[in-house]
Image (cartoon, rainbow, N blue to C red):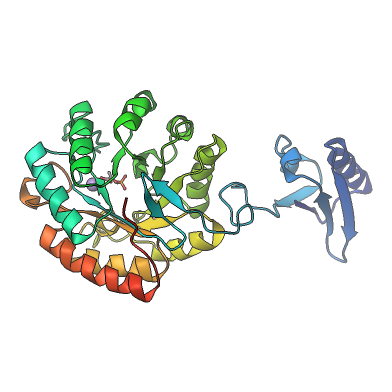
Length: 340
Ligand code: PEP
Ligand code: MN
C-alpha cells in the first residue's frame, strides 16, 4: 500500500501518518520528492483493512499494491485452475461446452434437446428450474420438478448438469440435484447467496453482472473462494451498453483481461450477450480465440415454443454445425473438450 500525502501536508501530519501505520503493526517508509511526499507501507496489507487510510489528515490518495481479490488473483495462484464438474474438466486447456434450453421444460422436450446437444459434443447440460425474471408475471421456472427432470435427463445422456440458484434458502436443494450451481447476472452481488454457494462443495458458474466491472466480478468470486469453495468458473454474458442493436454488449476483451488477472477459468455466453442466434457462432469463436475456457449456449428444438429466451435460442442443427467449427478451433489451440 502506498500513501500519497497532500502537497500542503504539515510535518505534524506526516508524523501522525507514520504513527498510525506503526500502530497497525506495519512499517512506514517515508520518501520526500520535490513535489510530493509518499509513505510506503511495508508488511501485510490486510492489517490496514480496518483503517480508513484516506481519512487520516494529510493523506491525499491510497494506492494498493496487490489486487483486493487475493484468492482469485494470478499472484496468489500463477497456474491456471482446472475446475472439475462431475468429471468434466474446465480450464487449464480443457473446454466447457455447456448447452441446453434457457428454462427446464417438459421431460420429452428436455430429452430431445439433451440427445441432440450431446450428439453434437456438448459436455455439460443446462436448464433453469428457478428463473430470475425481470417481470414477476413471466414464467418463473418449474422449481423442484425442473431440478428432477434436469438431473434425470443429464444422467441419461452422461452429462453433468448446471442450473441457476436464485435464493440462499434453496441452495441445499439445488445442490442435491445439480452438478454445478449457476449464479446469474442479476444475483452476482447477492453476497448472502455467494456465501451460501461458497459453503457447498459444488462448482460454481459465476455470471458477470450486467453492470459489473471486472473488479466487481472478481470480488464476487472472492466471496465464494473465501468460504473454502475453490471451484469457480467465471462467465462473461454481456454488459449493458448504450446500443440496443444487440441484447447486451459482448465484452470479449474482459475475457482476455480476466485470464491475465485471475487463475480461474472464464467462459463466454454469446446467447445472453447478443440475444441473436445469428451472432452466436461468430461470438462463440471470438470467445475461444481470446482464450475462453468454454462456451455456454442456449439451444431449443422449437424456439417459438420456448418458455423463456426463445428468440435467442439456437436450433440443434445450428449448434451441431457450430460445434464442428469450435472443435476445429479447439484443435488449433491445442485445447481438449473433456468428457465425464
Ligand atoms: C440464463 O442463463 O438463462 C440467465 C438468466 O442468464 P443471465 O443471468 O446471464 O441473464
Ligand atoms: Mn436464458
